[in-house]
Amino acid sequence: MTTTLENPSTPFSAEQARANDADRINEIAQFNAGELSTIHEMVNNADTLFTWDYSKGARPKLEKLYEKAKRSQWNAETDLDWSIEVDPTNILLPVENVPPTIEDLSGPGSPVRKWQDDDWAKFNTEVVAWRLSQFLHGEQGALVCTGKIVETVPWIDAKYYAATQVVDEARHVEVFGKYLNEKIGNTYPINPHLRLLLDDIIEDSRWDMTYLGMQIMVEGLALAAFGFMRNLTAEPLLKQLLRYVMADEARHVAFGVISLQEFYQELTAAEIRERQVFAYEAALRMRDRFLAQEVWERLGVPSKQMVEIFLALPMEKLTFQQLLFSRIVPNCRKLGLLDAADGWLRDRFTELGVIEFEHLEDTSEDYETYAAMENSQELEETASQSQQ
Ligand SMILES: [Fe+2]
Ligand SMILES: [Fe+2]
Image 1 (cartoon, protein in one colour):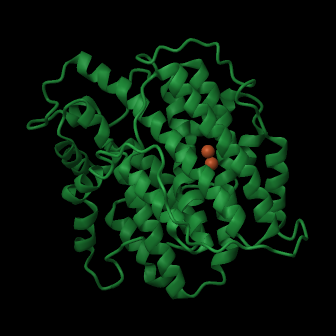
Image 2 (spheres, rainbow, N blue to C red):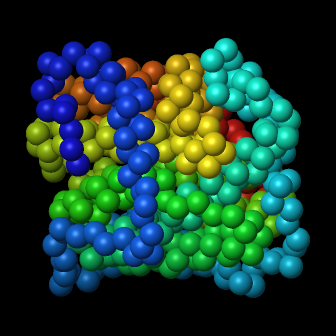
Image 3 (tube, rainbow, N blue to C red):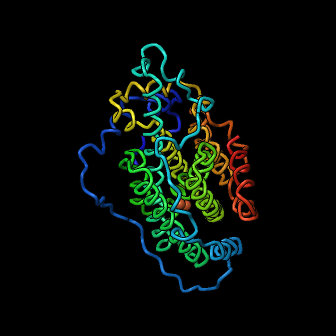
């Protein structure tokens, strides 16, 4: 992962300027242009580790999670009602109250200031296809990353658990792929920011970086994003699908927090700094992916101008970014990443205006709450509360 942040004396404003540089974000958005291959090849630099210590339960929290995962398997083909008919133009509920609002995006000078109701309806339909497509690609990222964790983590309890997550993620790829193909009929390629994040995770040689990138950063957001999407739709098949997926995702984040809490105890301050930089760069990529540049481009709107409009909005207007950081910041705090190594990550999150999320609940125990729920109403309420 590239970074310009090695020098702790770098003034905040320089890093802030890089984070919010519309040219940088725009350049990355061109990354996929002309990409036609269906195969994306990456080199995995990590060592594959065998362990001859088979003592199951040496790490009781991981063993408990593994046993829970074995009991919680479901079948995407038979547990969901695929006979439900779906109108792809009518999936999102009216979203006037979810910022950024139309007014936020169509002020003076905005390329969409003259858009009519029809244009915004078309935009909403595209956004659903884009969002679900990114869920799909992210799920494949999780599938590949957890396969990598099975190979690279040295602990048998973690290998066992990660193997169940591989099956979970295969099922998630399957359901989002099937829903997009059979019910939506409109897909988007992987967002370039997300693709670069997955590339960074796969390329890294250190086994714990797969956890940090995927289990903490990507999965932390996924749980919140699925809950948010579930509250924004009345479409019964999508609601059902997201409920099943969310129950799995809550375990996945717990897996990351439990494993890294132990491992980080052994690291030096310099090694922790490397994890802080990785977490920060991953957070930036995740934030930038929500700028949805491909949707604007597909609708003929210059995306760079929209990026500038988004970057100028206060955090309270950026619902998805809030969701992202409301999970990531508390989890980084629980892992000790905020204040270690001179508080470098605290400074970065302060600059981004997201440090206020640090005391929201972390997600390491969420899965127990989700597992205890007997009906979808309870799950929905909890997902809704977790966004606040
Ligand atoms: Fe997943
Ligand atoms: Fe997951």
